[in-house]
Image (cartoon, rainbow, N blue to C red; front, side):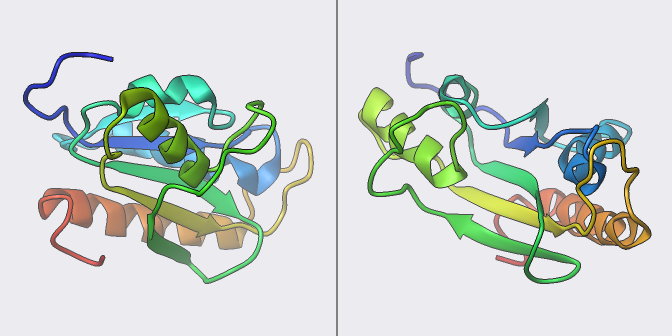
Length: 158
């Protein structure tokens, strides 16, 4: 782990499979955010959270995990993430809370403040495009996240 110092910028870490319909919501959001001028956050995308992402969240001002949700609130849900009490047996894929738990074990310090932006999706079949409903939810989630990041990463909507 790196030496203490100034906090690294916020990180938006999206997960999803672009080949599985609405599971592409996270990666698509990252593509859209990359086109935003002065977003004020680092952007990262992967198929799923892995134990190695501990290094990506190290020293961050905060982290927003982005993923598609097959159930839940429309157009999206936004909530704080707390470290889980234990880490699952496998490290093949981790939840955000499990990743924070691993971070605390490795860094021997509290994890940065983290949130989950769960964008509601509907179709997750292999080869499916984004559904119309998911595209609408994506637009709402992007507008929210850009405003939230522009407002200082903690001051709005939490």
